[in-house]
Image (tube, rainbow, N blue to C red; front, side, top):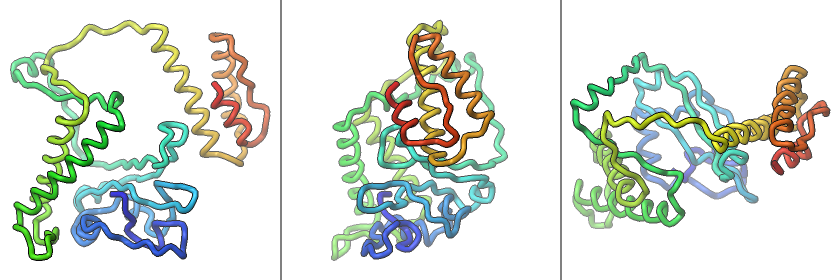
Length: 267
């Protein structure tokens, strides 16, 4: 969304003159849609983007009112050591009561369908720029054609039903993604042989262990390290040192510190 909902709760600077400008946020707030984080944390100040000047909550997960009844949790996780982004990760858990039922390979083969798979890890900044520009243009064109062009060259979102608006947005997102982001079609039911784990896969798994240690350090900065947690981490460090002949220092300090974080980031 890249916009705040509440001046007092969704930004860190009380003297900021920033106010909500995005019409879609206003429409969502006045509809039956639920802002999952604010529903569970009505007065908590927590932010999803930060820079040198201000922190703000501009990333959301919205659900319908009915689906929101099963909302279990919604949390904001710092992504500095995960994606190196200035945006945090927003995640929500919802009890839907829907049991997942997977189709057999034989059933997929009978359907003779195809599925589009995106390779988002290969997307470049240029790809994302093209996607954003194309999505903006398509949404503007469809909104104008849906309600007709007004004298002031604007279209009132409130005049469109939420079902129509959601269909318009979802179809536009998929259409733009397919034409601008890397991906490919795969035939359902076509299975590839299982790959044996090679050395690079094992190294990736072990690097993730160090990444998780960094996340724990960031989340618990200045807090005491429990004896059990220290023991588990030191066992992992010992295994890593023995496997790769590294010299990662074992935990001996009582609290998480910036020095420990920098030491882990080196590896």
